[in-house]
Length: 227
Image 1 (cartoon, rainbow, N blue to C red):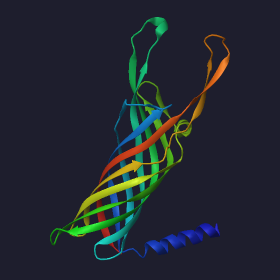
Image 2: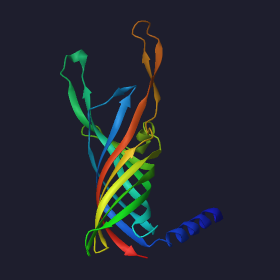
Image 3: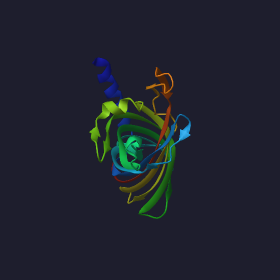
Image 4: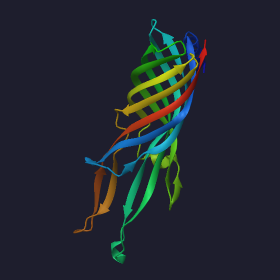
């Protein structure tokens, strides 16, 4: 308990050294790069989500600044699942399957600002981010929804990648921000599937390898406070 208390005090003191704090609220367009057992899956669609969070600016010089942040984000993907029933000679049916993942994202970006006029400036930035999955759900139109326990069998908890962003600042307060997250780490889990051998009828085990990486495009509006 004492250790956590001192960590909180240290972080609070660190962020109080920042020159600016910006609150963000926005929407994102999330998808995933996915392979199953070395076969790329191309049936995925973008999943509309949202984000909310805060970042702190530490001036390095007149135009460069360090900008760590803390954000809640929804990520995931929509997939079209094909089903068929050969015993009834039925046609293939398809239904959407939505994976909605909840993350706490911590980006640490280096940014550079450019003055356009007295009221307007722009900036560009890039750097790493680390994300922690804290929940989510899987939804279908026909089968209802599954809670986060189901996602635990498919996804790892931690995500890591590179984030790039750009934006406009009006009167040093109002911010329009565009960012893109490119996941580097594989967030998919491998698991075993047991099936009956069609010839001998004995149970066999096959390992399914999931290779999944997050891709997220975000738009947000922010308000900057001077500290």
